[in-house]
Image 1: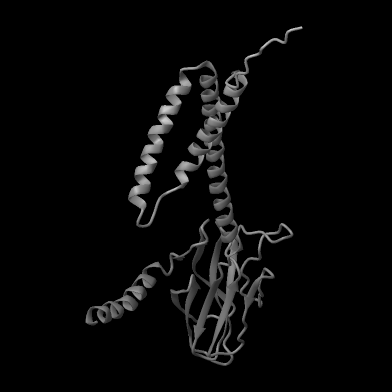
Image 2: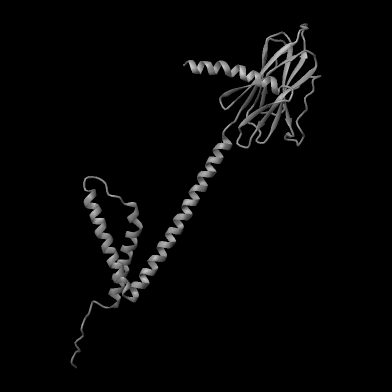
Length: 271
């Protein structure tokens, strides 16, 4: 029996599928990696020309692919993949931003914002400093104690530090590790005892926050077992602190500040 002669053609549809697939992979990888490659160095100009030529070649290949059904299908798949990559990149960028915001918030929460309130006097009297929380509750859900001029009062919270001087001249401090955001604290000078000194006692106050010194009113106290409200400290949500004098000291405190700031302004002008 005579054997039939068969014609072998390697350029069939299977080979074309493989070639189109390989071309599509190349185009896809080029599109993905191209934005991240920037030429530098002495050959940058030639490299840029090569890039332009490659872009032209890529556009030409896309036009050729668009002329066949398989090419159009492959291009559609590439476009879908590119859109998915762009969407995932956008989701990744948003996730990074959210992570950075969370880290910043965590760092801010971990940071300490200590508040130190001080009071000083130069006589032998027994004077106490007291900070009364306004609608601030303890861990037991109870409101913080009110100022009582008839007895000694210690700190309220475990993270607070308070010094005690029973006979002046002296300085008393009341320190809190963290301010209470949105909280208010009334500042009192308590004249507890004269220690045999019948003359009035002059008390000056200040507070330290964010590495800066701020003044509070000076008060002249003459009656034992009395407490004088000199003003209120307000802690904002961003932990910044502001002092507002009580109505009794509003006018005199403004004059005090003006007298303090005037020499400083003259010194600055002289420099």
